[in-house]
Length: 249
Image 1: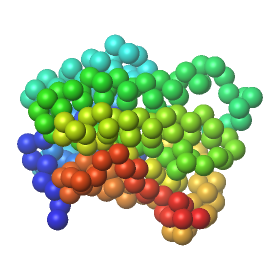
Image 2: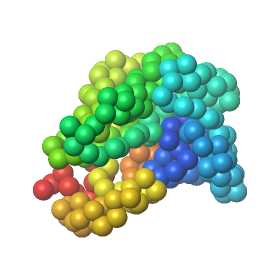
Image 3: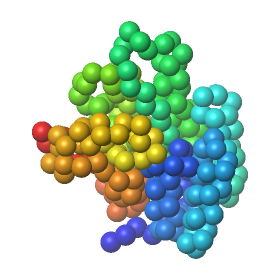
Image 4: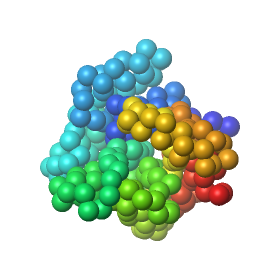
């Protein structure tokens, strides 16, 4: 069974490319009014146009997740454009620099924590109370497999997403009793615009898993969309691996 999301409003951060873009299109295909959020208006308008061409509802909401005021403004504008409610929040935006600890600059640490931790935290703080007041809502955070194990060069990125995993469980405990489900998806190596620079390294990383290949954005989006909808009505505080089986080895 595929959950019908007609009548719901879904805010997807990082929705102008990659996993976020695929998620926005899948949520719209299920009937949700999708608010496509990102910094690049040209790419955002293109995603909206594609969704509308397929018969879905979507609007672009520009934001810079590095800025506290912009994050709060995003929540307010999303609620207004969404007809007074945001029912689904997908925290998909993220930055993932790889490199050694000694070579990492202080501003890079600030950048990663701002987008990967602070932005989801502030958005949940702004939107979850209204979901709880209505007695329903769904939040899905996008983590990573390297939040679960150590790998050279991924410490900062993995640590930021490990924080998001803990927040997922804490928010599930905090808002779940009021009807708001909070879960996460943990992708493995995925072929997106953001991982093009990895070249053959992406394939080598993916080869360690049973699937033996990188994932596709639509495959990760399918897991996110499942958790967002009522097909997952009894799932709270879970972290669903969508990593080609890397969790098994």
